[in-house]
Length: 412
Image (cartoon, rainbow, N blue to C red):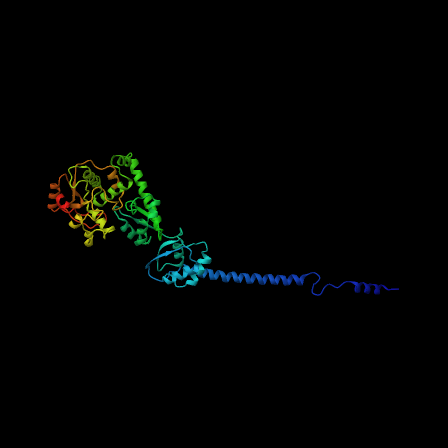
């Protein structure tokens, strides 16, 4: 028979022992798990801190100016370059000095930026961030205000755009003569000359040259439409009475713009040209006899006309007699092949609504104003009186003097 103490001992021996290390309540296991989690959080925080410091350092570096002193660099990109390829090329061009950092910045910190294909006008001294803004043609890049004067040619416009960091001059000229773009814009002829409306624009730096052409052409057509509405269908009247197309209107307006130095004389000058086309007594018949047209021919096709070999901005008697110059309106009747400049609203309005006169001649006199005459004798007297002066075509909005040649001398 078992005593009470034996029974208690027996019960203690039969109780199962908890597994070693289980702790019964689970506290040792939870303690180790907590320590593991804390270690992982610490390592993650340390890693994030390191990555943040590196990224912050790269972002700070990306705002620092690059090598160089603002020298412009003309480049062309396919748009398929990887960050490493772009960095290598920029380093070769002297635009960055740490290509690995730039590749990392472009690939990881600006991953959505894609290099815009086509020409780019870059500058040495730009920060990596500014280079990315330009290469991607982002909306965050700087905007430049530029004024295109009335009467500028596309040659002069291209130079002004490059001077303001908007695009390379050669690339703008190429876009203005690009056949595919001209077809898209429904422009006949071999260039957008005449359609590049002179105005004050706001353009992004390193803009797409083709887009600049589109914007200027759109502005020109908007202004013509506004004038047409104001003058109650003047465009249609010119088309019906003279067979003038949009291009013909801009061509004659471009000549008026180049000849006029005083705004209020534009309608008078336009009337002279219309009279020369219409007057049966004017000789040689239907010749506009405009110096700027001959000068423009020497700009766009100097190899076609022997007289252009010595051209220095002033029309000579040899240029007047040169029939190989397609723009020479002393030798070729009617309008020249196309516009010779980009006319403003005033010159276009003068062609749509010219003054009613019987003038056939004009010559520049004092203070930039012209003397108008009905006969060649009057014209010759004005020239001999010493009232005519000469200015080069390159001068802004500057007409050139008319050589004092008689109709017979011009025909020789």
